[in-house]
Length: 93
Image (cartoon, rainbow, N blue to C red; front, top):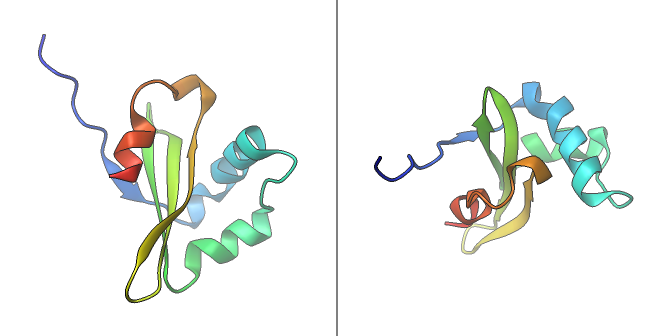
């Protein structure tokens, strides 16, 4: 068999909010952002959130910030059940 296909990135939408909240709480509790904060971030200017799905479920995400000159990764989260698959590396690239 050949090399595994590279996971596809997609933009996160408001429909991803429940799963995003679930992952935030799983990964970053007790400092996880609230649903309200995440909802604001998903639509804030200069912010981009992308994700990777596995079996039609969000398993990894990254938040990017751009001020017009410099882009910066703000956060990366990978479901513990999906870790060690190189998804974080895909999000950073």
